Amino acid sequence: MNCFSIWTLVFSFCYLTSCQAQPIVVGANATENYRKLLQKKKIGIVANQTSVIFKDKAQTKYTHLVDSLLQMGIHIQKVFSPEHGFRGKADAAEHVANGIDTKTGLPIISLYGKNKKPKKEQLQNLDLMVFDIQDVGVRFYTYISTLHYILEACAENNIPVLVLDRPNPNGHYVDGPSLDLKHKSFVGMHAVPLVYGMTIGEYAQMINGEQWLKNKVKCDLTVIPLKNYTHQSNYHLPIRPSPNLPNDKSINLYPSLGFFEGTSINAGRGTEFQFQRYGAPWFPKTEFTYTPIANFGSKYPKHQNKLCYGVNLEKENHLSKVSIQWLKDAYEKTPKDFFGKTFTIHAGNEKLQKQLEANISAQEIENSWQDDITEFKKIRKKYLLYE
Image 1: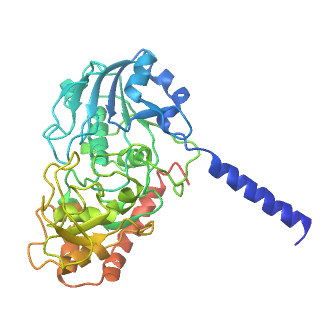
Image 2: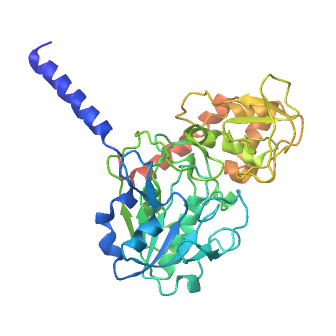
Image 3: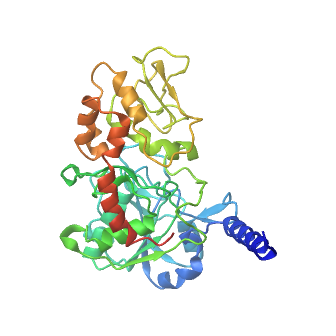
């Protein structure tokens, strides 16, 4: 190898190393890019516990976006909170009431329960809506449904929307069954694969650009992008995005184990290892057991206070696909009453249940998703902000 080649390799290594060493900067932290857009305007904010401005590169110190903007003199009028509430402490599907934030005195309007879409009177006197919520890139995770309704309501009422982008911890791949729109619900509103490989800002652009809003209205949308981010970037979430996603492992396994939400199987709720294990009292006896109990993330977990035999996935390798093997395994271990009322809306279609009932192999099931994924990637490509 000649000297030129050696120096080329050295330069390439140093360049890549320096790029990887650059910390990801979330949209909220890029205040220089959006502060002027907020000044002298009446602002609404869609936020929860993940809506923060980081104070150090390690992202261990932070202040809430609402607190930070108030300190800057921004005129925040009200806060809109998604599933799990403004402070992120409500159980899944639990009713979250309107209220007052005790720290700031701001009114909080819940966007969960009957009021998923802001009403016209709730948007009165707002000049701009800011959306800043950490997503995990999975179709049945409801923050993208809240995003849809915010874009729609604001478009109908001529209110611009500013999305402060955040990384997608499952943004490194696209996979899973696609939604059949006849099964559209709040846990799946768009004909996309289960894992869509887009940040919340990219996804907002797709909803808007593909005219998925009611009556094909279009929102005046601005995205404040991330810095030093690609879809292959590893990103550790410094704040749990919801009560039952406690760590990186649960977030990575969530697309594959989230199917259990629509079954009789416990997927770790009622433990501190949510979406890192699954089991039931009727599974064959194994050395691995656990007993779900009520906790802050799940007040009424499946099989509460009952010994469950199960499968521990804490040491499973990092996934870059949706794995159907565990769902199939649990189905085969369950003599009856496996599928619940919400299985179809979690799967997004009727096909997956029929495939399991017909004893189709896991590989065949996963192969059956590929044509829809290929078509979706053509749409997705138009809205990507990052490599």
